[in-house]
Length: 158
Image (tube, rainbow, N blue to C red; front, top):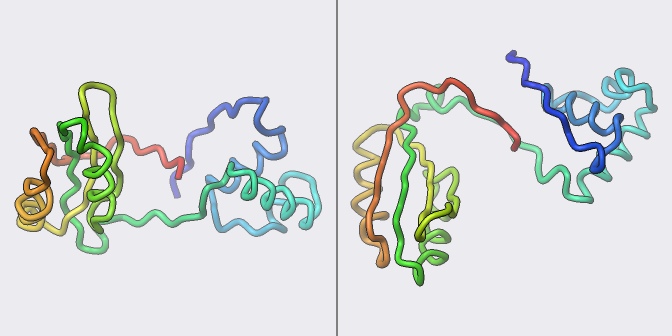
């Protein structure tokens, strides 16, 4: 298992024990309360209470699983820069966010830009998505698409 890099979490947001718990869970989200408690020097109940607080205060947004897309037959990872007419930006972002193949949609700086990432089984599926779902949306000015060749780093804050 790859060790995730360590980051300095601002001192004002969480204390040293919470930072230690966060680091443990980032490296192994399946770590038990008991195992975490042994490592940080608290009781299992104390760790559970801290994790519940981190959930309740929004520090932990969700617990998730990271899947290798290629292992389940998804071979095309594409990034899109989409220029949108300003009055259509929110509507288009919301519509694209509902598409199952779309993993993320961001509003970027610049004149009405959206940045989107999507995963496809193959180039044909991507082409179909572009023709039937993307290009037909009213308000899109232009689309620039780049296909991922190789990933060097992927920081998983999710």
